[in-house]
Length: 455
Image (cartoon, rainbow, N blue to C red; front, side, top):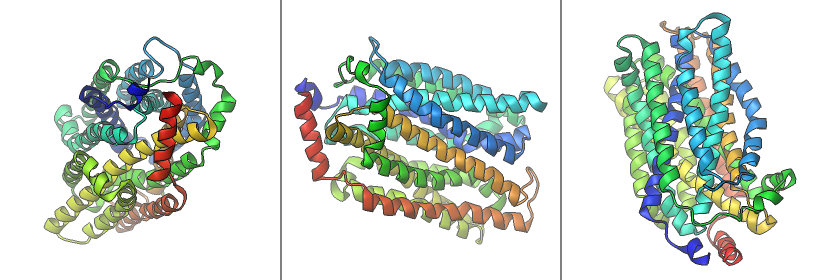
């Protein structure tokens, strides 16, 4: 077993695991960037109603996600603990994506109920696929350096998928719909669904796990152990707070991007161009992640990731006060900041969650990848829902009216609600540098002890 724990991760596993991130995040980005806009400007539902649905769904997730993580932790199959959930979760999530972009075919109360039910089901099925997917990381390797070599692959594919979905989405909806935006969004959702299922199949077949707990460990894992895995792991709690603050800031910008570019900057195609530059920088930074982390260190890179969304928001604020050529330049620069931040933040955060799994194992003798990753997924979704709710309320307060020229007061309000939340990134920066300790020697000692424990 010791050889399996310490051996290098092969290229087939890196690529197949990476492809799983492509389909998963393509669909996620379609929802994060386009769904709210689709509901308000295509379906014609009020922003306040959609924001409320998003918030209610996440309240339910506070029960559903840890419960699902517990169920996964208790799973025993011939294919392992996580892969069956990845496959089934992606299939169900694909169905939910298509259903959500079918809302324009209904009307009245039926439409509102349909929107609420399908969005809640999407959230549940996303946890079903996301937490088990990332839970594979500590089972592929326990070695710190091997993880840093493995994790750029799913983040590289996921980042490429995110920016491809965001950048091409505006054009794809128009092209596929042929003038019918409802049809365009539905077909766009079908593409996302197909990519998700196909990538899950690749991951489940070709990703090799070198370490997994004895299946008998599932029998002794109970609710008390699950609570201990979360609440007696102060390093994981610190990551949760960091992630929450960062995600609220970043998701607020994501939720308002189409509104901001369409109405404040006056050109929705600038969003696609901004996403293009973000994608190039994001993918490029992941390609060179290993030499970057060796030269600068994980801590420096994560600090950069925490600060750059604030720089992107400030850049776009200035873009609203300049001419056309300068506007394109500043929108592109904001894309660069966002691309670098998103790529580095998620890559390093997911590595650090794996490290906190090891920390909990060493400190409390409780190892549960699925519980910690399900909570991490919950935090990501809750921050998205919270910002979705706040975006809906904010758009209502500033008197936003879909598909019309906005008043000067509304545009000023839109600028303020776009920029202000980005300063939450400073809170993440402060907490990370004061509270998170799993860097360098301390982490090395933990992982060396675990190699002895499982050898």
